[in-house]
Each structure stands twice: as C-alpha cells, then as structure tokens.
Length: 316
Image 1: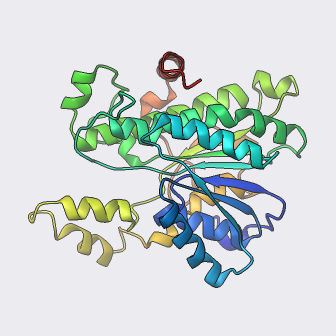
Image 2: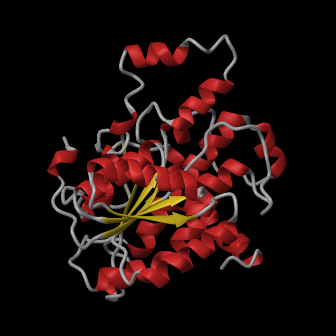
C-alpha cells in the first residue's frame, strides 16, 4: 500500500492545490513542500492562505510555497487565477482539484449555477481548461508520466440516489443538499475520465506528441476536516452524536490522512499510466465507481454541456 514516506524528491516540480489553506488541501501542500516541490496554494482568502503558509513554514522554513487567489464561486476569478499563474511559471507538473463544499442549502451563484456544482465541478473544469496548455507544454519537455491531474471526488458520487447528472434546475433543487453534493462528485469522476480520453495514454494528444497527462479521481476518506465540521455545526441535535462516535471507531480519520491518495495520484511514481482514468479509494487502491461513471455517453454529454455553458458565459 502506498505510503506518503515513499514519495521521492519533488525538487523542480510545480503544483497547484485548490482549497489548499485548510483540511486535506493543507495537508497536501504540507507534504508536497516537505518533498521540495514548489506549491501554489489556491484559496479565496489571502489572509487565511498567508496564515496557513506561515504555519507550514514553522516546520519547513524554506518551503517554496505561494498564494494563488482563486474563488470557485466566481468563474471570472478562476480564469484570472489561471492567467496569473501562467505569467509566473512556464511549467506545471500537478494540478490537484481539491476545493469543495458539502451538503449546503440550495443556492444559485451569481454566475447562474447551483453552488455545489459550480464550486466542486464547474470551477475546476474551467481552471483545468485554462491550464491545459501549460500542462501539455510541461509534458512535452518531461519524461512520460510526469504531468498529472488529481480530481478529488467522494463516495458521495455513489450515494444519495445519484444515478446520472441532472441538468434541469427544478430537478436539481429538489434533489436535496446531499444529493446535489453527490451530483457534483459524480461530475468530478466523469471529468477525470474525459481528461483521460483527451490527454491520457493512448489519446490522440499523446499519439501526436502534443503531450500526455495522467488523471484520476478518488475518494479521500471520511476525514475530520473543516468541511465536515461545518456540516456537524449545521446538524440537528438528533445527529450531533454521530461525529464523535465515528472518530472513536476510526471511521472518521484525522485530517492529515486525507491527502494520501491526492499525493499518490499527483506525485508518486507508483501511479502508472495504466491507472490513468481510474477511480481510487482513500488508501490509493483502485475501486469501482458508480456504474454510470463508465458510460461514455454520460461523460460526453457532461463535457459538451460544460463547454457550451462556459462559451456562452464568455469564460472560455
């Protein structure tokens, strides 16, 4: 089984981690810089990011760690973040799409999308789209398997009655807070598979020498993060006992264990080209996703819908 301690030196490699200032994202940034990578910590709050960076530098004073302002609730912010990064760097070896919210009440963003679907999926699709040129460029000048995209999903994509992506706003609103979370996480899995189709081993991009990108989606585990704390605080008194019990029996794992599969997919030599496009559990082991995730028509429809929406909004 993959261990974080087995990671080699990541010197001269560059990573972006969205939602990097807290929870799983923070642990991911911490472990990447501990192995000498240059890391851009994506966060919408400069104050929270700088606090997190300062905390990491207490144990790693020479950490090559930088703040990248990005707010997934504003698609214009996402586009600007990609442009800003591209003015600073000429290479990108790993994009870790980690930021997320879970089971929040129904809300439509100012961009016009259900908030969980935008934060967890659409914003990450858009960021990836604008960073694909630098990822491909890096891949062309690097050994095979050097460039990765890690899509943090959840077992929620296989729960809460999720059987396909919903596009009708009325259906989405009625699907429930956790159901909408599951929809966004299914979209993450489909996104990873679409990226593998387009840029993975055997793709036209790889065959034409335009660049190969390894991609995977995964469940990080039921982790005691800020995301779960927020849901615990919202929970009724009838459910307030669940989190302590889950912690006691080891079902809810410590926050610093949630980055294991993120690091495996994004940086480990143990993640091979044959694994690209697959879905993994919290122990970096291949797992079967929701059956619909394997349907080519489902991911094609989502990719076409997203592309059309982003073009109509002027974001691509």
